[in-house]
Image (cartoon, rainbow, N blue to C red; front, side, top):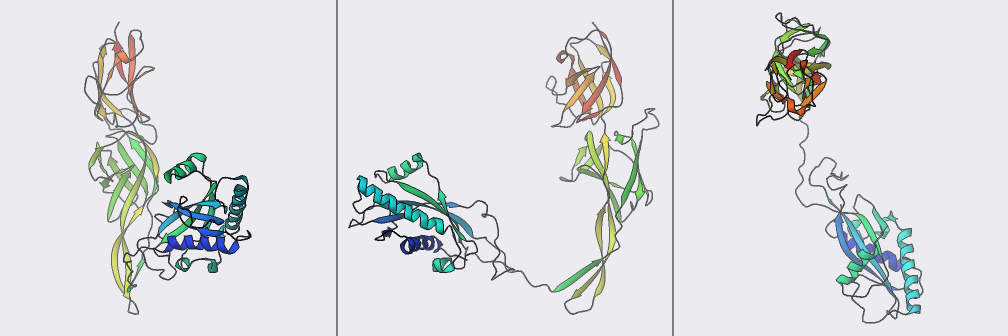
Amino acid sequence: MSTYQAISGVTQTLKSLLKNQMKSDPKPDVSCVPPDVRPESAVKRVNLYLYKITENAYLKNLDMPDPRRPRDAGQPPIPLVLHYLITAYSAQDKYEEDSEIVAHEILGDAIRVFYDNAIIEDSTLLHSSLQDQLEKINITLEPLNVEELTKIWMGFNSPYRLSVGYAVSVVQIESQRTRPIPRPVRTRRLRLSQLRRPRILEVLVSAPATDDLVLPPSIARVGDRLQIRGFGLAGLSTTLLIGGSSMSVAPVSDALIDIVLPQKLTSVATNAEVPVPPGTTDLSVSVQLPAEILEATLGGPALPGSATQQAISNHVPLMIAPKIAAITPVEGKETDVISISGEALYVAGRDAEVLLGDAAIPIGAVQGVEPTPERVQATLTALPALPAGVYDVRVRANGAESLEVKEFTLKS
């Protein structure tokens, strides 16, 4: 891998290429000085000036493998892109027609050399500091507009001369930080288990006995009974996963889980209790199962052991609908505010609306009171003028619509 000498090594490599491969007769000198520095004697020359260094963003976080130490890990080498300015000078080194033509010839010859060596694959052309670098050295013509070139020359307080930009990449400098070396494997562990993944065949949803509502398939509300049928549902412990939340359950048997959907579940991300959110989600079962393992030292006998492992079932869709318990008032004028109580009526960051007949009222803060999953409000002034009459009231939250229909009488 390249050391801190890589930058100077690239400059010396480019200088050597120009010196050895330019065809101009006589061959021009090659200098590596700022463009405003003039040599003591006026000679034809091409100047190679490193004016900027940038970092290669693609390789920045890539831990390049080192064939000398394939098992080591650590700080990756820093990948650099070197930006050069190439300027040609005639022997007279002043603005005259003939001298400028000579400078153009020199610059064209230098461009041809870099074009012929766009990818330096011959290690004999590289400086010794670049011999162990993994990435190849690429020389690319870098377009510089007039404004960029003018700024560079103004920085040297010198009159502008025809110049060409080149980008040389990737130049890697190896970090000197200590590399951690992984220890050799001293213990073999073979996990042998007959794992049968649990599977959900169907989910049946039924309303409480006090509710005569017939529920559509795969739609449930808080308080509804869920019967999950399948196989492999029982184990050391069983967890029901609903979207990003979970709840521990006790299966009736290996083929049946019978629960009532609670008001709150446990968030998988925060391990805190959260209200059941409305909307379409997925349901699955996670089962902890016993596993047999064999553990042995290198060359030693295998000894049996035990452990546990997790198996997750297939996912089935489930829609959780908002549940309306009551509305107040049940009659009023278009200036009134309807208050709706229930379960899973609202979830922050998702669309929610109160549906009054065919009209929709967006749910939000009303009179300084924020909506909650248990209570939302809607002001009728947000609606277009409606004739007096009896209207169905429903709630739609996160794409799921309540199944209960309450009535509101709008008075004139």
